Length: 366
Ligand code: ZN
Ligand code: ZN
Ligand code: ZN
Image (cartoon, rainbow, N blue to C red; front, top):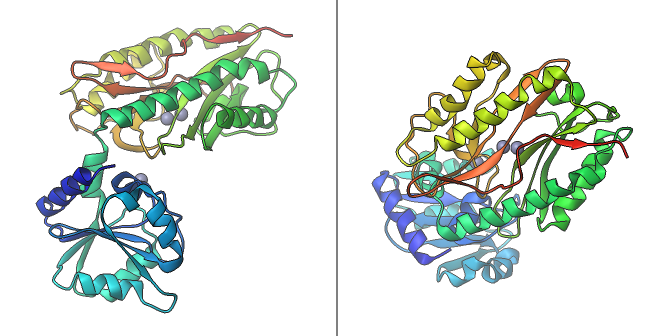
């Protein structure tokens, strides 16, 4: 986080015809200031005017935490307010000439309404139109942070065979995986999907009390947040004993589809073309109708952010964009499969951050 980034955000704010951004706790505040603030009912808000000095409004009792955060080293004024002051009126008084403000995309509705009441004649827009185009292109330190997250989740996948056993429930296995996500360096577990047998055919199944069977296929899709704030997200496929023929009928095509989408990534191609690359292959193999979601999502300070790798998104890829490539095949009532890596667009192509092999991991009975 640097003062230069704030200056860039201010120029982008001016270019968007917005007079000031109002950024509340969440990924955009962390991105712009490094302050990982608690989302409280009391207002904490970075006021970033298109012209003039940025400042942070915080409840007086949060001021020490704000000063101790990276925001304290940015040289921006931190204005504390007391329990009986109106923080909204205070912000409004500093923005008396503003006609348009951009509100944080994640601001609670109650705060949006309080700003509207404090500034009734000011048009409200979303700050995301300014901040998301900045966030979508990662700097080298951000890519390094995503690589560290990918390495940490790869280490968890390497250990999954220790815990995945017939006779255990998905929930029991999921608990071991969650512990490992922390042990390997994350500060929080964002999600753990252990989809065994037919549960693997539901892409967002998390865990259940289903007992894993002796010949099950298991989808393991896991992720967490690192101390840096950057997230991991990776899916690998496991089989207990011999995988069934109707699974092996599509798994090689899925591996090829995932690799084909990754290989299609380079600067200047559209996001949707990366989706098409793998999808066309699965469709030709007869599984197109079983690939029921988009190919991927951007990742950074949030697990799901721009750019979305989906039909209809003709956004051109640029060096520094980071996203998942995660095609899947889902056969209802039987099993499903997905392979997911985070990739980064480089100057002339692509680099995968996750490095575990894509082959089905076969776990023999103990
Ligand atoms: Zn995932
Ligand atoms: Zn994902
Ligand atoms: Zn978001």
